[in-house]
Image 1 (tube, rainbow, N blue to C red):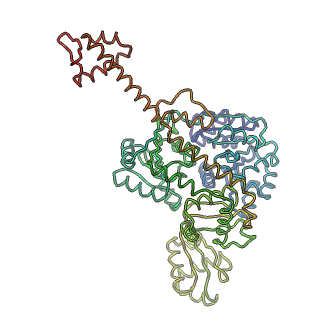
Image 2: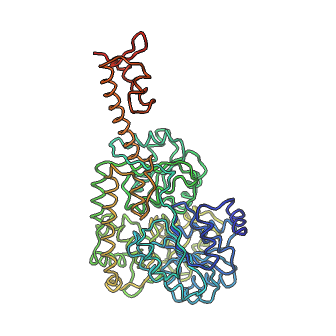
Image 3: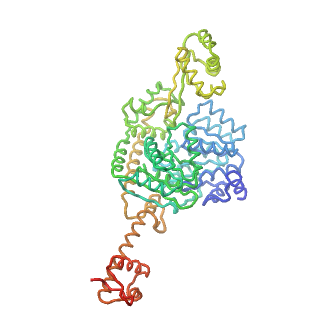
Length: 633
């Protein structure tokens, strides 16, 4: 394993592996199938990246999260490691080009969405390549009992037919024992080595509080911590509002959500990663794939969708092994809103079918067509158009994403489309009157075909690059051309892109998923009940409750969660009361020196001293001239 350690130092700058990493890597290098259950921040990606670098051939990584795939590919490229991601957004031409890289380009890592693995071209190409490892990220998605079941994961048993010699490494941070066994069976793994780490980090103290003065409490925590933290809220608007409130009260805070432009997001992320005191107020997706070792606290100001997602989010604190805190602060109305949201998100086959039909019509997809076409939309406009509540629409979008019907990307962007108006001769004459219009218009005609026949999507960044003009200048020129009637130009801000993965067939597209939809409803209801039971628990150690949910046990209560601390406090108060009663009984009968009292009481000497000092302060006990205590009557 010396080579593994050398690579760890060379590419990642770490001298030592985290717990279990080295053993997992050793099993993979021996060609064994492996299942690894590691906590959030446990370093799952290194478990396949290091073996991938140590062996000839390519490592195929299957992941359902496009943003996470793209982030990992970007991180590998920064380290001069060749990697590429193929998602549902790539068409057949893209697939052929990208797969060609692996035959001739020396690439080492191929990231695939499970939907892409269904593609016959991809499968045939993989059969022709030397594959050293299949890594399945978020492996709990395979199990129909998992909290994030995706039917496309069920066909991953095909991996064995694509390469008989390549081992399979299944990785997850949130799986019960039932889900682990289901995963092994679905992947047809051959007597895998199983590595299970404790999912509950003992360096994170869990605090659960129900209080009405929530903002004052958050403000107090942030000012007291003076460290890097994450505050999770339920909506984009709330993230912006809370960040501004914290800034107004002297805190270093920023907000982060999918609606922010990519450049601005990168800037805010960089600021947060490099600031020892900044707080990021964000929606739940923030933090996934981001390795910040110094997060000292995570605060939830809403009830999490499930205990699985809660565990992932609090696991983003204390990755350096130092003490950290996780607060869940809620109000009574949050419980009511949570129940209402769960009811709103109930989906049946009829509703999902109707939703899919309307979405296809909204995107102007004819029946039988639309496969691998990408469309942008503004979610608020879409919901308003069809009178959908936002929570129900989002639940349906996420369900269709998991079913492999479409791929959803909740990131802000800008979409532009253009068509030339009039004859080519008239347009040429008009463009000749302005150097900038001539450059922009000429570029469009060279890059895009058919702009006189139909409106076509255009990339303003590409036009700016080819004309050596700024993006804003290109936008201004096109706007001027539109105002002069030379072009029909549309430029709009979007917050969502949808890639339809299958042809539109309405009922025939959705009906095969009826059982999965029913199971998803039952699973969502069960998850909500588990969350409510968790926050209503006032007796048991919170870490013990979470561990038990995942089929694990703690050797003893954590001793530092809010329930454990309250029990300690109650025990101290009870003991103090008992000491007071016995001191009163003894001193009402006789005066006694401190030493005699301690010998007469079956309590710790320091506890007796504490109670005696308190009784003296309250003038219930006095000391006479010869240093004897007596009870005042």
